[in-house]
Image 1 (cartoon, rainbow, N blue to C red):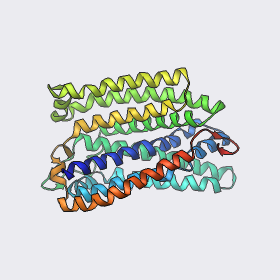
Image 2: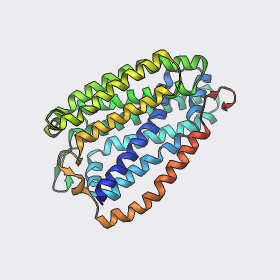
Image 3: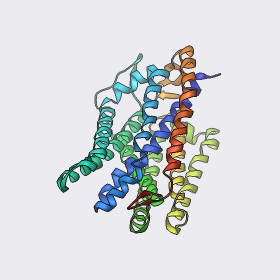
Image 4: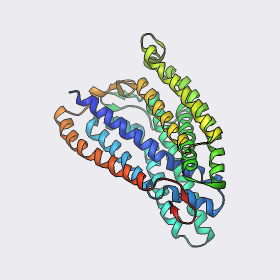
Length: 335
């Protein structure tokens, strides 16, 4: 068995699960300024209150798994991305504190302070995740087995572009979640916001997809050179199909869960496109998965634990979402 590939898949799965699950509740914070009244903001908070903290389990699993399964990659990526990663973690802490303290704040001023903290923490965390992705994708300078770049190599026009793309994509997911969970006037507002966020997300997807192949010739080969193009071309075609389906679901109405599920599918295809560009590198453009991997015995030992723990995490996550399914009542919470 190729344990390196198995661990690469498990880490990719963990990161993707974190992105889509924590992404939509970060999107709630990003959209917070568009909902002005206390009733609206309470509804937004209540829609994710039972599940938001559990979503971040996958971030811990992804980070810990990278350190254990690909220690060389961890030792290179962390120093290269310390500023955005530290900023992201501080923003997540601020957002979590604001989520809890908002309910306990007394007076309008106190609630306003924690509302701003919730907005700022959510937006900054999303932006820094996108910046880190862009910095990794554009390449990290490696010498020997260590990071050889500068303190601000992560900050480029491309990484800022990917940061804005992630913020916009999370806003789209958050709006689609609200379309599913809310009724009445709030539902209508969420649907309108989802349309605008969807248009902006598509624009960013096109921009990032256009620039990425020109960051590295290896990326260009995977997308535009025969025979790789015969396989990679399937991804943009499916992305176009999903974009049309999302637009129809938001314009025509109908089943309110459809835009959210299609949005998850769009993120999945973008994630697959990222994998096509980067594989087999874990630190582009010089360190492959196999060069960064831990010894096989370590991978096997950790895999035993992962085989037990990941189904448990999936089980309780699915159960939580099942219990809190359906629409949310402004007076009583979930039906």
